[in-house]
Image (cartoon, rainbow, N blue to C red; front, side, top):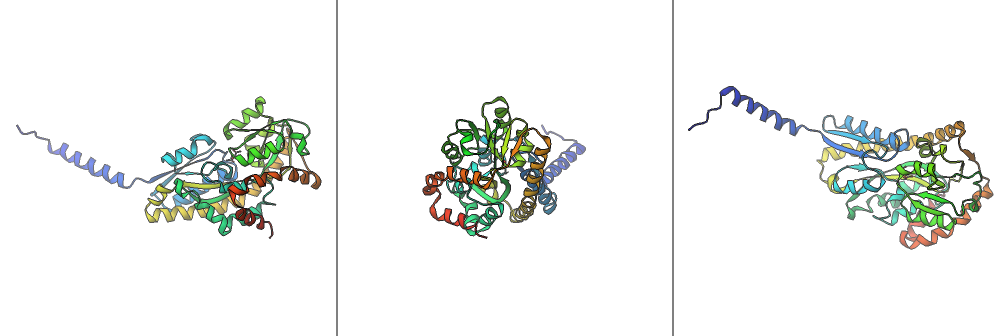
Length: 333
Ligand code: LMR
């Protein structure tokens, strides 16, 4: 028996098929960009700029979806998610790569960079740029460095001037062995915690203190649950924007070029804004009047420097003396 499909129905099936296959071919590539901070921070602004530029460079070809504040993946999960292809771009702080390379520990050594300009010089140097490729064998491709700023030490105590003031206190740290050694050297008790858990840990006294740039302190309201923030500038918190190298290498040439161009524009934008946002947020914290901002003398800073000096020697083999020398040289303008 012959099955007869009415002509009108057959036609509509054909149209539907043609439409759906056409629509599939025209689907934009979805690029998920996940991060753990607020939108009104250097990284938050950089991610939004990347979306704007990528979609302008590649109209209809890519759609960038930005997820801020750990809403898609938090610290513990974002790297795995990138490797599994559940997210395409993330920008962890340089302190969060211990498991993938020891080389990036260079960025956590206390008082390594005199200021953000020195850090920028090192990142732009050949040695700094090579580090973007240091995790290729693990399936991770570095695309750019983004600045946040220098870290400030904060605690729930009235006195935070000299290194001895943090002895015995519990400090939240990022997942970095160098930062762990830094606080142990100072006689404090470091505890690795995901960024999304820090506010509550400070509020409930699970930890007494933390270290972060002004923009993170302000946007996460850490100043509302800390008594003193000392202007220590004792280390940097910057980011490496990374992607899954398999995904990246598999992109059509024009798409990769368009995304690369957008990344260059977003990097310039974020890095220009970083100092401005941190200055603004330091002022906002002062105006809020919740935590006291403790300025330090040169002698106080010298005491902090001296107290953490042994940390460098502990990591020099893992990082390499040569790389340390190059990073130090970036302090000479
Ligand atoms: C932190 O965990 O304190 C920071 O790395 C968060 C961030 O991404 O700035």
